[in-house]
Length: 487
Ligand SMILES: Nc1ncnc2c1ncn2[C@@H]1O[C@H](COP(=O)(O)OP(=O)(O)OP(=O)(O)O)[C@@H](O)[C@H]1O
Ligand SMILES: [Mg+2]
Image 1: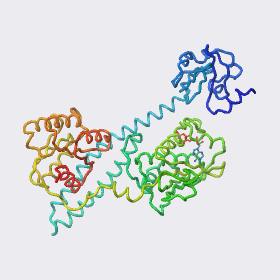
Image 2: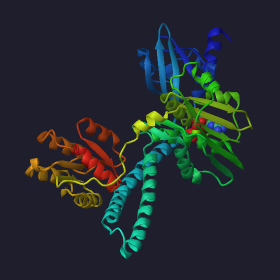
Image 3: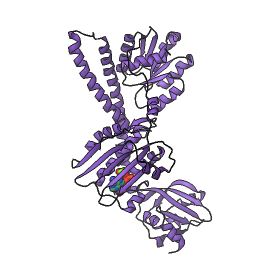
Image 4: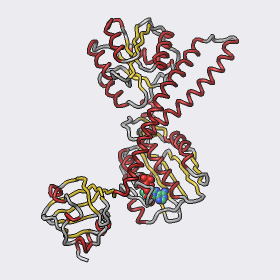
């Protein structure tokens, strides 16, 4: 084997070297396997026979191309071409047409996610109504007497049920938009692990025990919850797949990683002052050195029909983004341990990030006029009721157009507009722009579900005073409204 050939063979990705007239000069085994030809048959032939559009690669750079394997299958590949006297082509990723079922499957899951997200969104609005009315009733019930006892118990039961349902809705919403641009905030990893494990229970066979050990020290990481969720799901499902028959998956959280580990992974001067870890351990089939070496490659999978090979690649890219590292300890038949080491947030940052003053008594209004624009009856109704109770004069509008009209009738009379962003017809953002064009100083409080954070962010940057997330309590509402009125 000559030097070029042994060099090519040492590269894990499929490689092809072409002359400037697109005849194949050299190729590695990985490429030959991809197009299902013998290396001998490729070298010396024209690339156009299995790559009809090969000429385009003379421009260099990355592109997506279609290759034809000798068995007739079409292969869609992402390739990178480096052009000098010869053209070196590297295949970064590829999917054969027979594998498109997998892609379909993935797309179906994504559609399901969207659907679940949509339902959860509507459901959340209903819950906002229920919880809002409960909060209102708690405040108008007499403090003592027989009425308080019975009605009070019922109200408490309704509230508890609705709070639980609201928790579930939020989890569905988070699951349905794992790739969102959710903002980072300190995530209590131990708490999240518990919630994710509870949700994954139904995906784990009964012969496999999923055990979560409580953390001795809490771990908080500056991240978006959906990113950490994604890491956990991928690791736990991989562990499940590695176990055939009886077995156990142990998930634990370490608040502080040992000094030696931090130095080993990040050097003597790590960026963060402390690191913690998420540890997922299984007693499944384990991995040999070859699998371990390719673990994080995109599309690398040993699960012939069921895997996309994207799981750990995604985990890796999230961990890199967060400034962490991954350690894998595994041997064939001895199970695997995945340690995800992440920068830990110190107490100081947590305190700064937590919104102060969410609780306490109700802060009353002084008769200011408030315009509520929300297409959802339940939300509009409870906002109206709560605000009147708090001492505001309330006007409501069931959509953007009506809202703008009501505002136009007497723009100066409103001290505050409470605006839902997600409405059919005239969108909340458009309404916001129209109102502010009329009165640039107008205080606006945004009502947000969970599916529109980037819009919320934009409107806040454009000058909305604050936002309140559904479902909300009357205490938080009273606080936010006073805050918007700069009181
Ligand atoms: N806990 C584990 N035990 C044994 N092998 C593992 C484990 N986790 C990952 N692997 C190996 O790493 C490969 C890549 O994992 P990755 O999560 O990226 O893709 P996948 O699980 O095959 O596909 P997908 O995540 O799309 O279902 C797996 O196919 C498997 O061979
Ligand atoms: Mg996986």
